[in-house]
Image 1 (cartoon, helix red, strand yellow):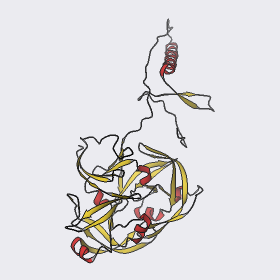
Image 2 (cartoon, rainbow, N blue to C red; image 1 turned 90 degrees about the horizontal axis):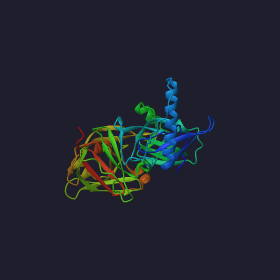
Image 3 (spheres, helix red, strand yellow; image 1 turned 180 degrees about the horizontal axis):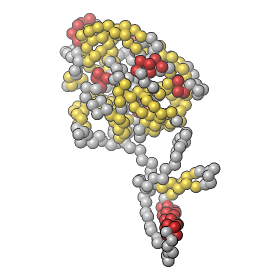
Image 4 (cartoon, helix red, strand yellow; image 1 turned 60 degrees about the horizontal axis):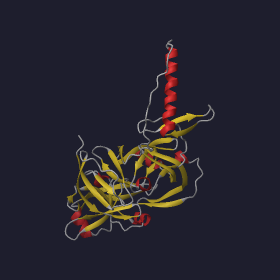
Length: 361
C-alpha cells in the first residue's frame, strides 16, 4: 500500500465492514485491521467491558455480563467510480477546492495543462528539482522547477506521490482577484472520463478501465446521452473536428482553461469572411507575463457531427507558441464557449466526446 504523507487521523469505519483498532501508548499510535474470528472476538470483549462500565457507573450490580455477537463483513477501502465535484466560476474558469499535503485552497481545473501546476508563492520553500520553459499564446511561461508532493485530495479523488511544476501565478491572481493554489491538469484525471456540466456547476469524473470503458455507468435519471463524436489525442490535448459547411473544417483543442476560444490568424481569408465576425480589438492575458492585442469576434456556423453550435466568442491570434508547446497543428482552441453549451464529456482512452441532456431535477 502506498504511504501517505501528513496522515492526520485514523478512521474507525463500520459502514463497509472494515474495523480499525488503535493500539500503543500516547507516544506511539498504530492501527491494525481485524477480520473474521479475531474481529468478532475483539468486538465481543469490547462490548462486554463497555456494558460492565455502564452498569457500574449507574450503581447497578450485574449478575451476569450480557454477550452480543456482531458480525461484520470484510471490505476494502471504498473508492467511488463516479465522483461529483462541485465548482464555481472565476470569470469563466472552473474553480474547485482541493488540498495539496497541508495546503488547501482554490485550483483551476484545466484540461490544457499536462499535469499538476502549483503556485510558487505557496510552495517556494521546497527545493525545486529543475527549471524549464513552457509556451503560451502570450509568450514563454517560466517553470521554476518541479517538486514532489505526497498527496492531492480533490473531493473523493486521492492522488499520491505526484511530481508538480512550480510557476508564478501572481499575475493571474491579480487579474482574477483570487487566491490560487494551482492548476489541476490531465495527469491527475487521465484515468477518468470527464463530464462538464456548467448548468449544474458540477464535474463528473467517471473511472474507466484500460480501454476507456466506464466502471460504472452514469445514472440514466441524471444525464441522457444524445450522441458522440470521435476525437484525436495529441499528448494530453483532446482535438475535435469542427465543420463549417461543405468541405470546410478545422481542428480545435479542448481546453477548459481557456476563457474564450482561440482561432489561428492563419485560418484563411475565405474562411474568416464566412465564419468569423470581427467585433473589436482587445488585450489578451495568459500564463505568460505579457499581454498582446488581438481581434475579438464571434465564431459562427460551427458543427460537431450533427450538433450545431451557437456562435462563440473567439479571439483571432497567432497560435505558433501554443502549437510548439503542445506539439500539435491546431487551428484553434475551444474553451468555456464550447464546453458550456451543453453537458459534454471527454473520454481520453476511447477518444470520443459525448453530448448529453441534463435530466437532474
